[in-house]
Length: 99
Image (tube, rainbow, N blue to C red; front, side, top):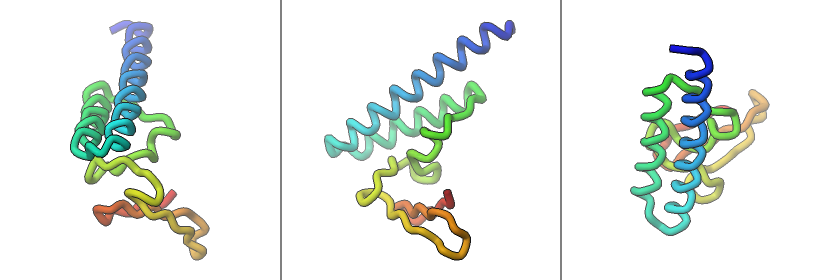
């Protein structure tokens, strides 16, 4: 496959992922948690299918274990760990991530 074609595909996949995450946020705000999780799962499927990487700003926007959007104070708790000097994000499912 041509390199230009791969770049075009990856850029369109990135746009699709951004659009799906925006729709997931809208669905979460409307109170439809299952639809929001479905959109996040679709993003993860696109990542696997096209072997693409998420940009840093989107990488820390959802839980990879349960598929829940990360909204501080609502679905996650954010704490500062003095020992390691980093942020710890704890999802409602119990999964933690160090940022």
